[in-house]
Image (cartoon, rainbow over all chains, first blue to last red; front, side):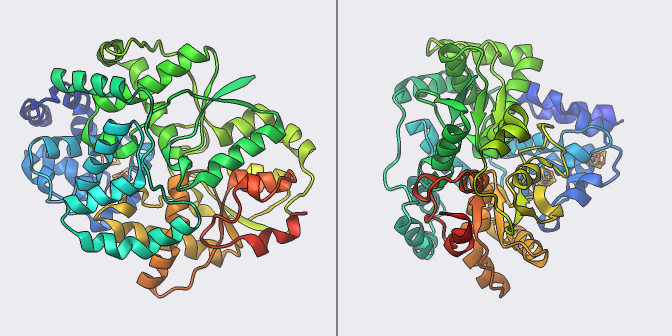
Length: 190
Length: 291
Ligand code: SF4
Ligand code: SF4
């Protein structure tokens, strides 16, 4: 039964990361539902579904509900669940996969990936992350310039201590880097 | 023995004291660092949250450059985030032949290859294991006697890398005790600071985590926190004001990079250690230990 559900999830996930999803069959098949991950998770209290419930929901074929939930976006990547799981399940990596699947299918809660996208755009363009540009892009993308204004006193303090970057740094090989990333985009991430 | 040095993006400006003090301390201890030429951002968790292959390729570019320019040298980073994703890249490439091939094809586009020979290290672990207690203590001129330090390591130093205990890592406390500090017993030392969530729409959750970290450090008598990661550092230092506003507390706890504290014990000066750039001043705290 569990195998069938896992297979159906894996088949369903064939939207560009099918093979990667197969690596994660273990999470669905070998989880003993002990709840150690949920009890260890520092952000579980704010999640729509705790880590253990995410696995239970996927076994019950509720992939879309999982992808629409806020859970993956509350993962702080602390790896407590991973190192404590008695079944050796790498749940943190699974959260990353769910984020990618939610974005690929456009099912994520509105706004959640905005910061990540702003970050990645800067890295892809310059080869480095630049905090000023990152924050501006992030707030513009969430259409919340007020957030930027609220940040100003904080930014000012950092600026006074020489800790706020005014110009993005660029690497020499940024054109090369862009070519490599374009190649991957053409070939597909999976 | 030389090491290839990967500073990581936040060291360039927002937490540049970490980079400065790393160079100063390495010089004083005779640790030879060669900065990786034209390194790119590791992408860290935001990139891995959105795409898998590109993230591994970004990191393989750095690893490939390190392998080409300094064969046989370990790659040393000072950021838990950079360390975690570079270490993950190495592991995944070693275990997954297909991924290796696809990353190899991407690197070929820019005439680069990576054969998997570069070991990724965290500076703290290098100091503790490669230099060791005796070598470091020999150079200590200003032991940090009486300074109550809570060692805060955060997540990705030992999880899932396994370079130290996953729950109660000891490297930072050990190093601080070698240089004479009074190390505060701090069970939350590997707990999460919220990481990137602090900058996202999930800030509330991160503020609460930082509140817990600060409250426990203060309760246990710490007069400062030592960190080994720029993101942890930013969260526990720069957001104290917002934590106070949110929880009605009045935290004003200096936070220092472990390299700054080590530098002070080695008799290095304020400027070369980037002291004075902190938002919660540590000047009064460190004055008795500096000449
Ligand atoms: S800790 Fe592991 S086995 Fe237990 S519920 Fe979580 S994933 Fe399943
Ligand atoms: S890695 Fe994510 S899901 Fe796992 S315990 Fe940490 S925050 Fe929770």
